[in-house]
Amino acid sequence: MKTPIRLLFMAVFSCIPAAVIAASSQDLVKRAVDAMGGEATVGQLKTVAIRGSNMVYEIESSLTPGKEAESRQGSESRFFIQRDLTSGAARMDWERKVVRTPKPLLQNYSEIMADGLGYVSGIDSTTRTQFSDKSNPPGHPMSGARAAVTLRELTRQSPRLVLDMKMNPKAVTALAAQTAGGKKLPAVQYDVRDWRFIVLFDPQTGLPARVRTRDPDPIQGDSNYDLVFADWRTVGGARVAHSLTYQLNDRDLVVTKYDQVTPNPALAGSLFEIPIMARAIAVRAAMGNVPYQWMIRRGYWGNLLDSDEVGWDPAAMAEPTLVDIAPGVSVSQGTSGNSVVVEMDKYLVVFDAPYHENFSEWMIRASKKRYPGKPIKYLVQSHHHWDHASGARTYVAEGATVIVGKGSKDHYARMFAAPGMALNDRLQRNPRKANIIEVSGKHVIKDGKREVHAYLIESEHAKATLLSYVPDVKVGFIVDIWSTNAPLPPKPTAGHREVVAGVKKWGLTPELFAHGHGVPSTPYSQLAKLVGN
Image (cartoon, rainbow, N blue to C red; front, side, top):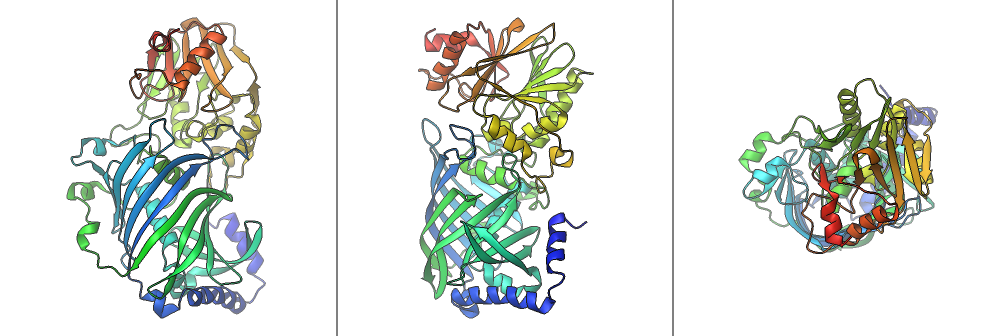
């Protein structure tokens, strides 16, 4: 079936002679190849070694929610990339410092791609798969989704990309000028494997200016994901960009600088070897519904769970479970991020929607199975960060009212109304208007037998943070500022103090807290003792 976008392209260009379209698109590609040094010069680049660094930012983990929210730095890295541009094999050695945490985390590892398979040597994440945990030395095969992401970005970054386009003219089609950085740039479309690249050209130099994909994003909807080229230098006679910046909807995400590019180094085959045990269970790069944005950005964030399920490791479990922590209160377990479901008299209330639609769909099914005959009427969102809100659209499609903290309603309204043709989630397939309640202090959900409270608290992790509370069983729910995926430290963090301050401000008497990460629940007295209240 042709997509609506492709049908639109066909309609626009059906009245233009095919020869004219082919000539204009091929002229752009030929000019770019010539600007880079010519077909023979670019073609002699068979292998390449690149040393450089990058700075990474995240726009959906900001302090304040909103379209113009400030970005938050996630990590900074040094890297050494060795590529065989003819076979597609690649090795990327990383020295990454994750700086989003109070104490920076160091991650040294290598990514290897060969024969359509991917492998990670070393520890690249605070959230590890079962294979990584059990292997010695540590490492794990890439999921099919991650392998697809890695191959796509290697293809996008290749200094031979426009030459490959010239050598495959049937894969190149003309497009109308595309807008980028407030300017209209000539462009062509390049279809390779399952990927559709939109290549934009600098009208003055003829060089490729950026390579765009249309990526589904569960917060911003269908988005422009661009690799922007600059700082072109001559390498072995060919011109190679030494500044590469990834942007999402014109906002910087990954800023990369090449310090040294070596043409045609001798590369030993052993560089690209994948251990036999890993190769035996490795899967080839997935095609189709790949969560590109999640894989790319969580990887740089330093806590990607490398799994096709996104939310859990299928090698460790078929699916997550619900754990009862109080009468009518259950917490998801088996994922690195948790949801809570509370049983009311006639309906259910869920706290938080982490990850993507697949986890939300599981949580909805599991909640209805645990508490049959009751619809999910409310979703209470702790805060706007995308790892805890990316599944919220599914609850809107389910018919739930979404409860959020003061100052974030507009952010969620944009999220639920975002165009999602590429996302193709349940809300896109069955649109409905979202009902959003914004809490400026205290909000009470009640049905005659039980109450659920949501309280706005002060937090420097995220503005508009809500603390949820079930009074009759004295259970609270808080996310990120107190997590139990690690023991309490000798001294309280700022987040720990914020939880205790919120409890004290609102006069709560919790006995247990469920968490957005970690074990199902922890006695509140442990935190109160640490903080000194």
